[in-house]
Image (tube, rainbow, N blue to C red; front, top):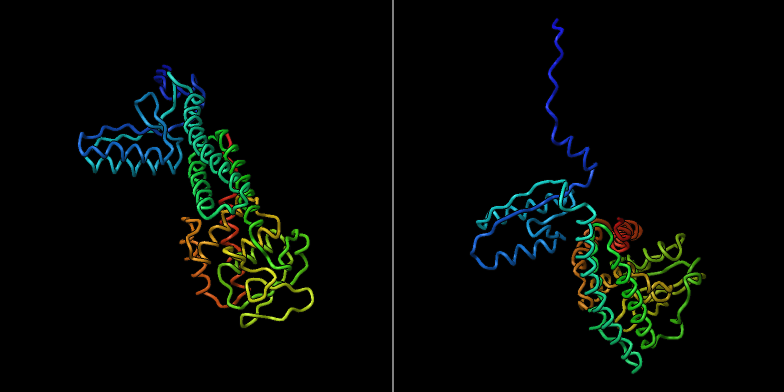
Length: 349
């Protein structure tokens, strides 16, 4: 056995970097060159990068946090660039000199805050118009509700690429919540409900047996979910044939002829019930209400892009079973997940 000591290993560059810079965050970088033609390609790629939430770093590369989703997104975009005759490069990197991780996070926050401020400005304009309409005793109209719905959809899109929780989101959410409540109040003021339709707090709706037509579909499934999820977890339901039913002790009818809770004006049963229970100010529930409205009344009033997908899911479960309690159970899972989606908290830092 040799007595000579082994030669020392050469230093590991990666280990040296790690020791000097700490663990650091990892970033995905996309660097590319585009051909001169077609001219629209540069705009197309730029729009795709904006939609992904990527930010330019030193005017040399576009960055995203290093996640599996981001790697897939950059990978597909790189493929498109290659097919268009460009030369892309996607790499994972850790910052060493020139910028810190905090600097890059600040780039993301500034980009998202600019998006949030644009939404806030539109929300303030809509709120001012709604206030003027209220002073004139006018209902807000379908245009105002459609604009509010579009603002919510855009807020969801921005929030999905708000990787580090930019502060501007809270202001926009507050504006939209206030605007939702204002429009709901103006709608309620303009509606002329029958005597039994006076507003009641959620407490007054507990301990009841809810009666509706057999063969429940989207409005009744959603309304039953709202009752059990937010009003009375122990609520019971009775399903009757035909379009009308006589009331028994402790019963309330919904979404049927002569019902105590049913369509009012151009509002579906879910929307009416939301107002009766004092839940109209809940942003996530308001989004669900707009989807249910667009599916049930088929008027495209809110133009919710999610309506087609939810319609298909509800149609599928109704095709799978004719048992009304089973429809309510399975439908509740759909609306629970939908509500969770719209009720997502801001991303943490």
